[in-house]
Image 1 (tube, rainbow, N blue to C red):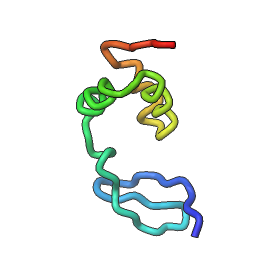
Image 2 (image 1 turned 180 degrees about the vertical axis):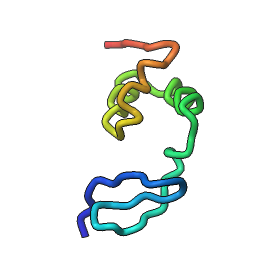
Image 3 (image 1 turned 135 degrees about the vertical axis):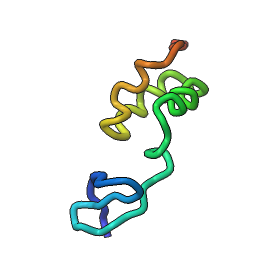
Image 4 (image 1 turned 180 degrees about the horizontal axis):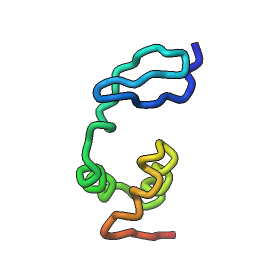
Length: 71
């Protein structure tokens, strides 16, 4: 079965468009500070690419203290 985009409705679970309840992933429950700390250990290109993961992640990479650009 192909999964569609999901939305969060409350703490601890999410629903897909079919109304099926799914367990919430572990990353969703992490604070922005902890996510920024994790992202600071990843290459800048991959961090920027992570912005497509969800609406919450769109501007998260802009909060990193250092961006390393290498060719």
